Image (cartoon, rainbow, N blue to C red; front, side, top):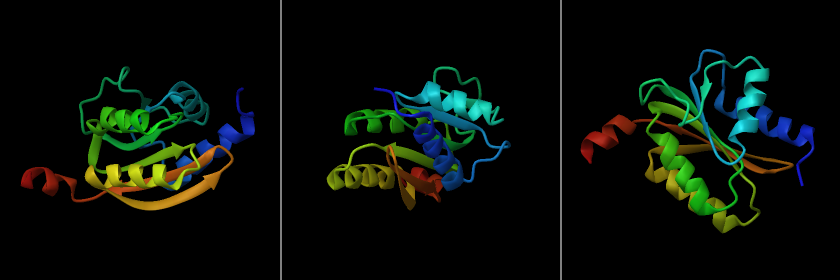
Length: 145
């Protein structure tokens, strides 16, 4: 069953606020609900939005990544890996976690930390938890590896 329009809008509002998204940012989106997220962002005037399949910008040029609509840890991890190559060294990311299991959230947090992100906030909304993180010093981590 499809979620009410207002619930989806609440998730979009939360993601925009947590990542401090502006019209100047290049944004890459992924997940089962990426099309809905794409349409909602375009309707709000965000024109620099793409998915990995439609992206025509060089890699590492996006400053914001958004993931929505994933139901399993494996799907979220796959989406993270898919968009991570497009994200800059100082990117922000927001992920909708629609599971109430605390262990599920912890695993996603660990994965984000492995990818060079630092968790900033988590906000509960009707569809679940929107987790935001920022990547800082990732270039230094890559060089060390």
